[in-house]
Image (cartoon, rainbow, N blue to C red; front, side, top):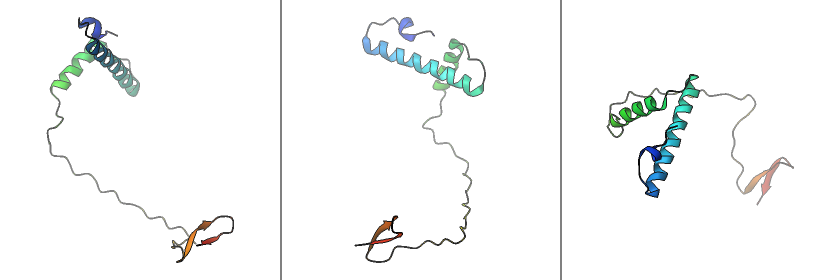
Length: 104
C-alpha cells in the first residue's frame, strides 16, 4: 500500500496519524470490496482515483425523492391449544417449579 503519510511531506504528528488511518481504511475497503465481489483487488491508485471522484460528486445531504417502500404484511401463526392470558390480579410472577402463579 502507498501510505499517504509518506507522500504528503509533513512532520506534524496529527496529520501523519490521520493520513495513516486513512490509508488503513482505504486498504480495508479495497480488500472488503474484492472479497465481497469474489474478485481480484483493484490497483490502489485506481481505487484511490475512483474514490476521490465519487467523494467529490456525492449526493449525501441532497434530498432526492425516494420510491415508496413496500408494505410488509405480517403472517399470523396460530398455535393450536394455546391462548394468551394475563396473570390473575394479586399474583406475582410465574413459578416454574410449581407451575402456578406466585402469590403476593
